Figure 1 (tube, rainbow, N blue to C red):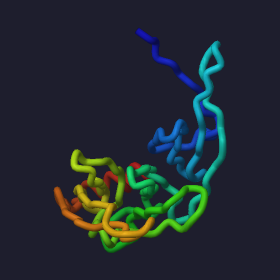
Figure 2: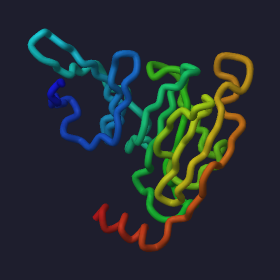
Figure 3: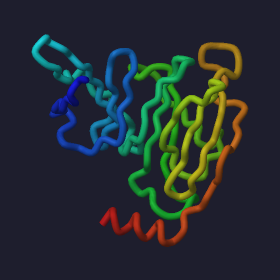
Figure 4: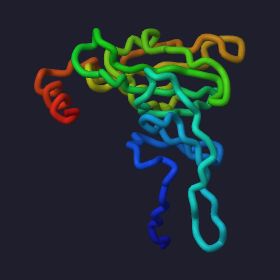
Length: 183
């Protein structure tokens, strides 16, 4: 059985990284402050090393990334937490957007299309091929949707939206704990 391997990641500059995605032989790190950090694992016969490739910048409101998800429809979904994301669902809570390619193009917001009341957090694919997105903080829940909705390369981003769970509103004890942790 192989032994676990620890690989240093100095290119993350010690900053908090909420998640990473492995896609197309590359690692995509959802890093706070830096943006999307892209790296690849290089094996040289002696060991393994993570090699930095590039940073994909993101707009300021996306500063605290949660998840980067590559769908089967060749789209990229990005979720983030707004830096002032505490309190009610009427405040700035975070978002989710979709784009064709990380290298170019606009990231189109779809949070309202999905009817999310909390901060979009993590995406995954359900057994039937639909996508699931979880929401946290202001309200917790799960929403299912499809992205293969119409004609054209980038035609309707979401369809067949269905709330699977929630939303379950955050209570005052949850919010007080978040404030305490942020202090």
